[in-house]
Length: 346
Image 1 (cartoon, rainbow, N blue to C red):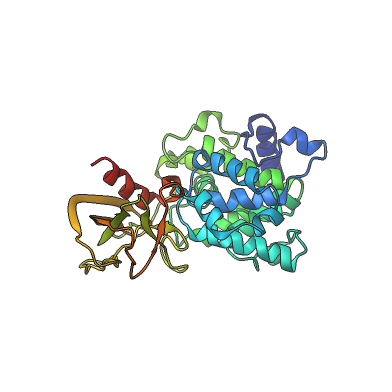
Image 2 (cartoon, one colour):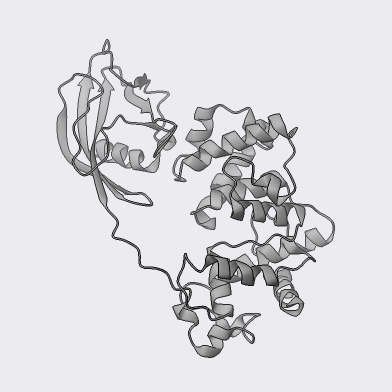
């Protein structure tokens, strides 16, 4: 097993991807240590999001808030606005909670062990393993989607995900070395991302091509197998776009719990199969005949857009007005940005 990890590390030393949060193998060999804040930030952002989408957000966040103490002191609204468009907004709320716990309970220093990291808000088993391995060189086993695919093919495992995760974790743990575990964690993820890809894996240039059982069996492209997903349901709702005569927009901050929690948004009704209108203010609402469509993890959303023009002395039943010079469409979550774009195009 050590021979396999050595082979992968030798490949990584040459082919490591360049990431704004990553310390290269050469720099690591010279004693440069990864910044735990950068590793944590990147891992939270990368949950269910691609590397390509995360890079610019990571640079933005670490430029505005270069340390965990800076982030802990930030205004919630500023962080949520900076996160807009990245999706899965509970991650942004947990990012703030975690930063504040690190500052108040850990004197601004990240815990180094897997078990301690697990106690932080928003940090689950994978993220704790990734931080402890990459930032602190602990022999923790990482198991993300890329690693699951590599393990399933390496050992030609045909039981479907997610039930087979414990088996894949066992296989991955056996291969995790005590020497350079941080580089190894990144190497095995890079292998899955660049060579052992979901479709058309490049087996011919894989450093593990000889011992790979799925390559030998000709089953690599079939793996990993997954339990069939249920049909994604559709929810509907009404979204209310109202503007005062002075150009101010009627907005609301979504409840902390639930979808788009803590984000600035246009007021809307509940989202379900048979929504009931719930306007935020008494007004002459016009159905624009436009439907904003967005897909969340577990359902599709269809929002009928209602519009109204309000007087300058209008008082809403819920929500608040944002002046035309303070309103930033870029601070809206993607679903609400789609609403704004549709209205703006009419």
